[in-house]
Each structure stands twice: as C-alpha cells, then as structure tokens.
Amino acid sequence: MPIITKITQQKKNKERYNIFLDGKYAFSVDEEVLARYQLGKNKEINDLDIGEIEYEDEIRKGFNKALIYLSYRMRSEHEIILHLREHEMGEASIEETMHKLRKYGYVNDSEFAKAFLNTQLRTSDKGPRHIGQALKDKGIEAGIIEETLAAISQEEWLERAEQVIEKVIKKNPKQSKLQIKKKGQDTLSRKGYEGTVTGRVLSEISIERNEEEKWAAVYSQAKKAHTKYIRKYEGYEYEQRMKQALFRKGFSGEEIEKAIEHLQEEGQSY
Image (cartoon, rainbow, N blue to C red):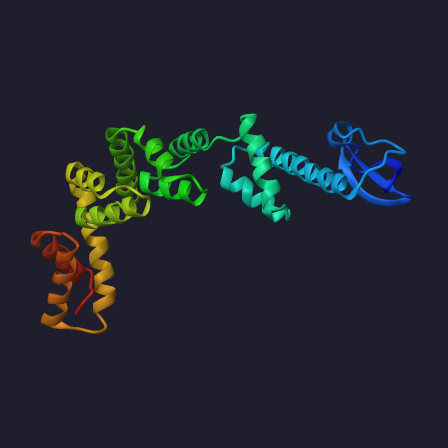
C-alpha cells in the first residue's frame, strides 16, 4: 500500500496540507480532516482510504465555502446549492454539506423568508405578489412563501398601496384624476399588489386639487394633444379630435372648452 512520505503546510492557506505518497504529491486536505484521519508520515493508506478522505475533504471545503458565502448575508438553501455547484462540487458532497449546515443552524428557509420579507417591507414599496415571486426565484417552497406573506395583514398591504398611489399623485400634478388612477393601477400591478387591494385603494383615494392645479393639468394635456393634431387636422375635425382626446383623459366638457379657447387666444390657431 502507498505510504505517506511527506506532509507540508500550504503557503497560501495555512489550514490546508499537501500529502505526498511514496515521494510524490497525491492530494491535499483540510487541517480538520488531517487530524480526524490521523494522517502522518509513514502511515499506510489504501485506495479506499484515499477516496473516503477526499470525499470528507470536499465536504469540509464545501462547508467553508458556504460559511464565507453566508458571511455577507442570509441565503436560501437553493442559493447555497447553486453556489456550491458553481465550484464544481459533486451532488453527494453538496447534500452532505447542506445536512451539516442545517444541523448547525446556518440555513433555515423559513427564517430566511421572514428576513427577506422584512427587508423588502423596510426598503421597498413592493407588494405581496412581487415579494412572493422573488422568494420563489430563491427556491423557497410554496408553503413557506404562503405562510410568510400571511403574517402581514390586509390592512398593512392597503396602507402600503396607498403610499404608492400618493407618490403617483405627487409625481403627476399635470394629469387628470382619470389618468392618475390609470397610472396608479398600472403601478400597483407592476409592483405586485393584488387586484382586490388595488381596487379598494383606487376607489377610496382622494385626489384634491385647487383651481390653479386643475387648470395646469388640463392645459398641459391640451398642449400635448394640440401638438399631436395641429399638423394633421384643422377646423371642426381638429376641435373634435382635441375634445375626444381630453375627454378620454377624464376632463370635463367645461375644462376642455376653456383649454381650447385659451390655445386660440394664445395664437395656437387651427
């Protein structure tokens, strides 16, 4: 059987050792594996011993890589498995590594999901559907996702959705109420809020504007419509196109008439 003729400590990693068999380099092991198998000079080892040692060493390396990966932030089991696969670890070694991580409490998908949800609630305005999809992408089981999201009440999701709509209102002072509600609906859907929450928020939201703000909105939209139609239409057809466009945006007939008259007075002839 081969005999260990030399053991040297690696220069770049003091916790790993190079093993030489019959005068030739054979493999390297972690310090913990070296001690566990009592590897020393003049010890005889067979091929089965070598295979077992290399397997245990791969698990040890995987465990250390996982701990480093976890040192930056919490990870789901799926994220860690993908990370270990990127380092070309075998599936059996990965499974044993994951077993050790679970045993020592380094991974727990339920705790990860809760922490992820809390971070999203604190740092973003995303809704449950968006957060749920993000957890699914990280490999979290459907049951855990459902349980995690259920911890947040419907009222809290409603409050968050209201905050999103309030931002939409502030960012679009020159749009009609109808336009804002449409934009708000699209925004809430994109951010992952459920239809029931969106419908309730939009039905209850109050868009208060003074006369000056109302005029700024209709005039701004009239100018945009004018730019679009003035080169294509004239006279009665132009005026009808203008009225139809502004009506679809939710402005009243009185507001539309006033805006068109104002454009005429400014010399925006048609």
